[in-house]
Amino acid sequence: MSIQTIRLFGDPVLVTPSNLVVDFDKELRNLVRDLTETMQAAPGAGLAAPQIGVPLRVFVWDVDEELGHLINPTLDLSADLQEGEEGCLSFPELRYETPRAFRAVAKGFNMHGEPVTVEGTELLARC
Figure 1 (cartoon, one colour):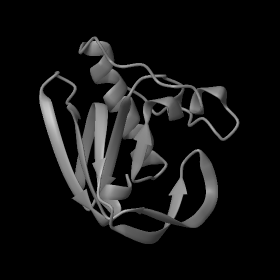
Figure 2 (cartoon, rainbow, N blue to C red):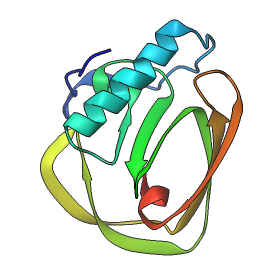
Figure 3 (cartoon, one colour):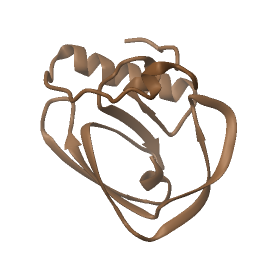
Figure 4 (cartoon, one colour):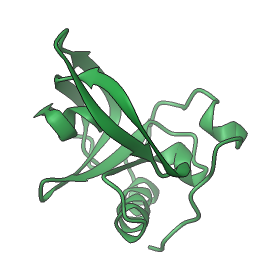
């Protein structure tokens, strides 16, 4: 496992649709670990696989001392919005007031292929 280079705005991988994960294998577990180490080293609250050049539907987060990951996520967002300053590791040093859903429910899988549901509000809902 290792810290990877974060792709920046303008990199085509950031605007290319990502692929579903179909193999829940050692390579996927290594990807989750690389994403986590890279996010924490940056530091950031969340990081998706395309941000390190891997076009797969995988993301990790570290919010309010909760570290997690989700594979092939789907989202259900509340209609209630929150305004807050937001940044992105692929746009370093830029932060903007951005409206986002106040509450989000994300469903997907963990790195072992087991179903996972994550419910979050405020910052976790933003990730």
